[in-house]
Length: 77
Image (cartoon, rainbow, N blue to C red; front, side, top):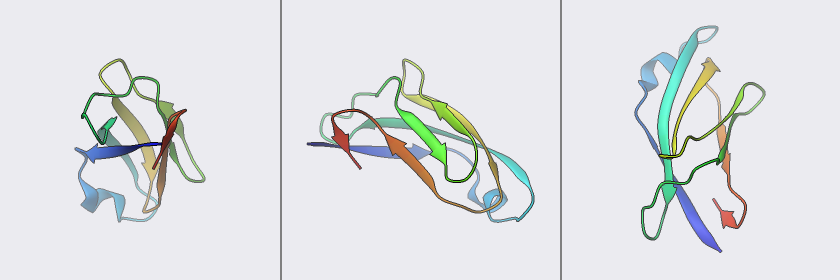
């Protein structure tokens, strides 16, 4: 199976502040040929869910520190 990688463009300091809402922006791409993955599922565990656009980019609202999960059919992370 192919692997996926996620690049985060958000400010991580704001994610560590508890009870604060923050926007996390990033891009999901194939780990081998670095092509963007459209419609990948991105989830803040215990919170919001979004999908990537045609360029593999996403924006996700997060509440405090936590873990995100990225899934795409046919790939393993």
